[in-house]
Length: 374
Image 1 (tube, one colour):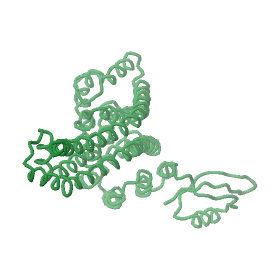
Image 2: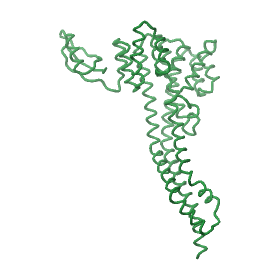
Image 3: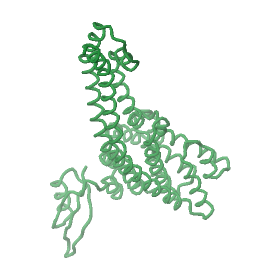
Image 4: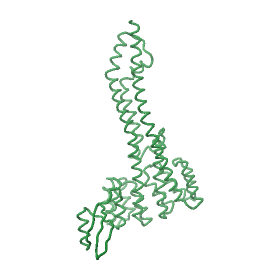
């Protein structure tokens, strides 16, 4: 299903709205069948949330979920939509349909649907979810842009280490052995480590990329990701921005705090933060405040409980969470700007210094040999 903006005339009056249809021709035929004279018809901006339009027009849940899958670019959601619709059609509740799917359904789907059920406003839930999810996707796209140049340098370093290990180091080692040279420690270490040096470099590059990107795919390793030097605070800001804005949107829709926390825990991509949200919800059910529950957990950034406490004291919890989301967004943009300046320089210096050190380790004994022969 696609979203189309149209202008049409009927009974001397002009109307403008957005509608859902399979194609532009199908949209035109639908309008004409309803007695409209179509003045203009165009597909809506692809950055608009078609799932919101579908929910506002009260289209079937299957259609809304299909458009939601398009909005967030998640193929898994498309695969489970028909299964959910079939279970609901057979009389199963929405919770039962989700439970039947188990791990096959994206985790965020449970939070979105249950929040929509609790609030009664599917369109607003979809709108907030898509907007916040796209902001996170944009942040990760910026991370990729920052890392492209360092990654190219690291790949060049990997190729250089293979060249040294296969061609250069064995040739110099034969010369050293032929003249029975006394080698400095750095040269001995290089000759000894030559065969495994390329694989160590490959392992280091893959490990670095894995720590950064694997948690978002698998749901594990977020704590290690957040502990990365320099980059850890960037990932903390991305996840806390998503969590704060999601929780604020649910509270604005008057969803009870423990439920809102649970739904936000389902939706946030950082699973360590999501599990911390579940525990905070249980703590609140026991009579604690949100700020106290967050302060007891090491998974929440230390600034967040302070802002939440400020909102609790003024009966403006949702507003304080919105403020926190904006703060983490600013912090994320500042950190991204800093990293875009630092990381390429560090990578270039590392590659250059590694190549210089290896060349020096091989040339120093040769210089001594030439000096001795002369």
